Length: 190
Image 1 (cartoon, rainbow, N blue to C red):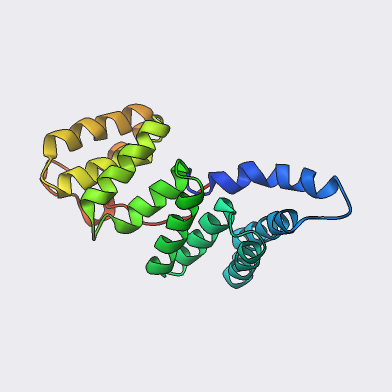
Image 2 (cartoon, rainbow, N blue to C red):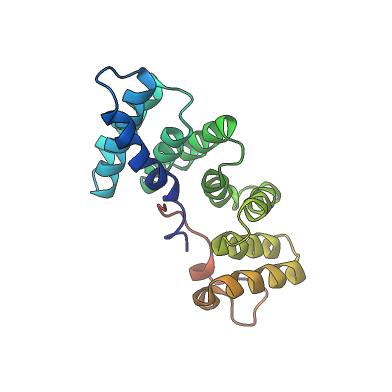
């Protein structure tokens, strides 16, 4: 479900980082950190989670205020099924950048099972920031359904399907509860 939006942030930043790296021979800790984020992303995309994790941690050590490094480290932790660590990294990214929609989304996915009201709030913020984020509307519907708000869930699912009709297959078939296949699951996304 999240295969098209979660990893979006670092791809947008990646080309800018390469330009900045080429602009001068002396780099600041922030620039070095940005280069490490780019390296980490390359490692992560090639399936080398250990190197990606190390690069992101080094980037954070150099620039603790890198929301992208915290976010990307969170996605590595999600891929490794280290949900607690992923949640901590998404929360750090949001302390730095409170309107980081992908971090809000991933945090909502990771907490929906244990704290539906918080996930509802997070998904609602995502769709207020990015009204065309279909997966957020879909997941908001599942969260609302888990809270017994079936009518609101139906409304949000309709919004998700209007944006991305392929999501219709993720909806439950005339039941009050979604099937396991329709439940949100963490995946890396950019």
